[in-house]
Picture 1 (spheres, helix red, strand yellow):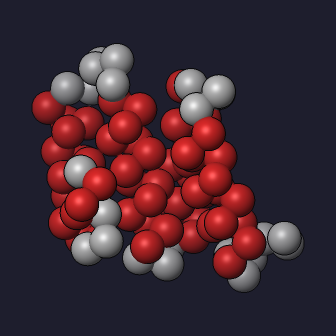
Picture 2 (cartoon, rainbow, N blue to C red; picture 1 turned 180 degrees about the horizontal axis):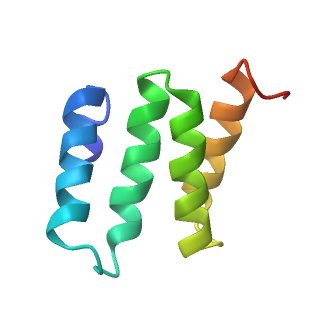
Picture 3 (cartoon, rainbow, N blue to C red; picture 1 turned 135 degrees about the vertical axis):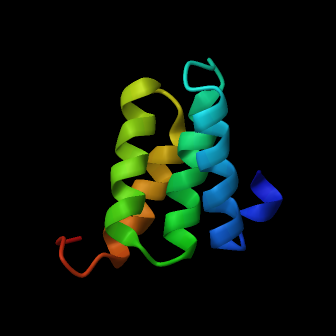
Length: 81
């Protein structure tokens, strides 16, 4: 999924497909984080923050969604930095 994140529509569709096909997969955190990254690349900062929060809730010590949330929050016009 990581090579397709740069093209956000492709990254979004593949991450959504992964979650749909295997919603209880222990590695599903990767798909949720992929959705957060894809939304960040697409400049949908609110959605990136929401998906990063979901990933952080599922696995609090996983740092990638935290980094995505930091970047999205910094660029989000409706949230103070």
